[in-house]
Length: 265
Figure 1 (tube, helix red, strand yellow):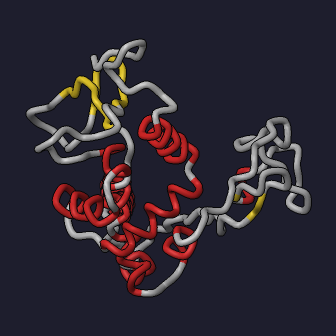
Figure 2 (cartoon, helix red, strand yellow):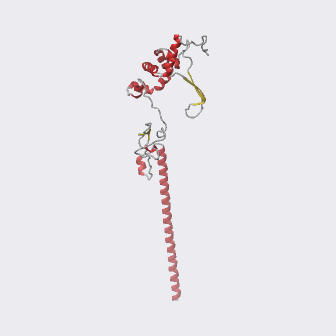
Figure 3 (cartoon, rainbow, N blue to C red):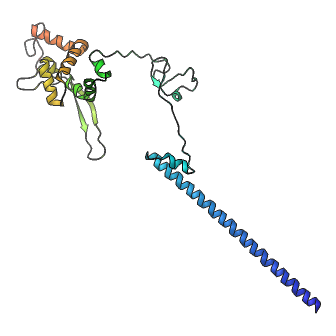
């Protein structure tokens, strides 16, 4: 009897130990699963914050305080200022654009003159009054720079012609097919027609300015007169055409359509 009772107590103790071990194992597995889910949730949260910060950065709406409050670290690449000059042609670059075999103390660049291999001519300073108009801060000069395309069109000597390709959709774009031609035309305008391009240099300055205002919008007529005089003094093409006209008017050159001269076509 005593042996049988001892066996029963031993079996109950063994069963209790197994149940306790199973319970402990299940509890341990549950804690491990909770830790795993917590880790995955944290990873998903960081990934979401990173993607959100990236989208905001690309849209230009990044908030530094928000970025600092999250786990996302946005690295910034700073090129510095574009103030390092090529020692040969004086072109300006970022320091990181130098050739790999050069140093910060003696930087060399190949995107401009090929580190001195290509000799570029010196760009001449613009004559007056253009130099002042391009650099001065007065109201008149600022207004000129704002409307510089109007003055450029009003003082051009040739017109451009090409086969333009048009698009029904998409952003505004100028595209041509084939070759581009620049037409000068006759030096003098016909009776009843408005002078244009080169022809405006063979009428008085007031008429040239009024034609420019009518065709291209409001411009300073006094400034047009000053720019016309500047071109007549400094532009070789204007001087050549004016010289040819003077020789035609004086009879040194045959007029178009006369005997021995070129035809009008």
